[in-house]
Image (cartoon, each protein chain N blue to C red):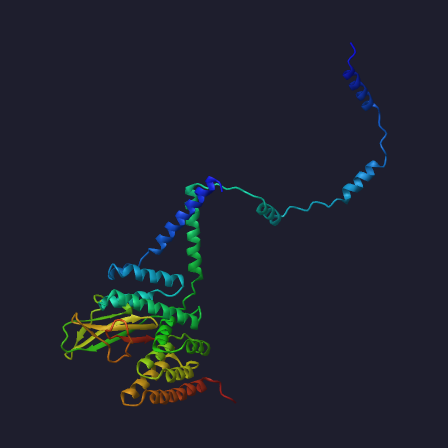
Length: 183
Length: 210
């Protein structure tokens, strides 16, 4: 039985099977076109990173991952702040300073100041001799210190042999001691 | 934003807030000596100072001084706030490399009435630490010396005088004042004597000519 479709297919196949004469210069032209194309450069790390940055990405993060990232961020910020704090110059060696107060009628005297957290229990003064001389020795590094004598648990006295601290806030007298760097 | 991203961002935010609060609340145990109403305000002032990279120890000591002297909470907060401001102004004048001791002394000098310009001039005039010159300046003003006279004298001596020379200069001024000399005159006389002494010392240290 005659089938027009099969006949057409057969004719096309016969046509395609015929040998084709190709221009002998075609290979040369193709190679010339290829060699004229820009050669692809070597992939560098910077280029890869740049390409990665320009492409959209999607991230997922678990709550635990978020906590870890936040903790790492906090640690980083703290380290940065510690590193960027201006370095304090060397404090220098501490030197012993003797504080003296004449208080004949006192029963107990405490030395309080910036060097002992203003804690009246930390540096009790010792009575020496019969003249009611109260003394205490404190090691101090260079700096400027405010201090006062606390007499009998009720009375504040400035050191009569030291400069007076101006104090508009607390009203009680204090003295100033400046310890130099030893130069 | 996807739900995962939203959850992650929220987790990050919560973690950062929690971590930030934990860091901020590392309160100094010494502040327990303050009353409950004053403590958080002082702690907040300390946090602010820390953020501004100012030394906090002088502020803690100021607060503790108030607690020991049984000052009111308001007085303590005012004192700490005032000192923090003075430390900031001192740092502006002395530069970010100033040590805590220099800043403390600078704050005292500013509180006494010295200008920021004087502090900056001292910084340029002297290579050594400024703790003692600034403290001497503050002490002189506290002794009644006019701030301009005190600043001029300390500036004149600061370049070459040692710490011990400056302390001796201050003692000489206070001695003369105690003997009845007017503070400005006492300062001028002591500064002249100290200048002669300091320069004589400097001449002795120079190599002699053949």
